[in-house]
Image (cartoon, rainbow, N blue to C red; front, top):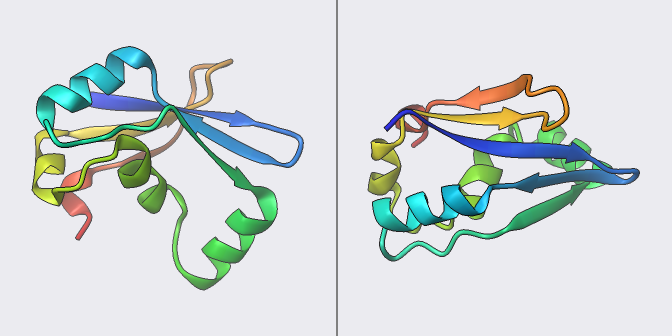
Length: 100
């Protein structure tokens, strides 16, 4: 499998992370017990506090958004790309095999 795209939309007060319906179907096939979400919203304040105290937010957003309970299922994914839907630029990418 190549990659999963997560779109990142800037809002006035934060970011909305989303996956397309086709990606949700693909995730359900890869991990039958998964429950992918449509979107996750994170306010700027939460993002800033999180990244100051814990780690880069994207490393925690994608497991929650994909709804994959078994981290072993992530090994089937080569890359997760966070994309600006307007420019199609890759903002951030994660190799799930490097997440523990």
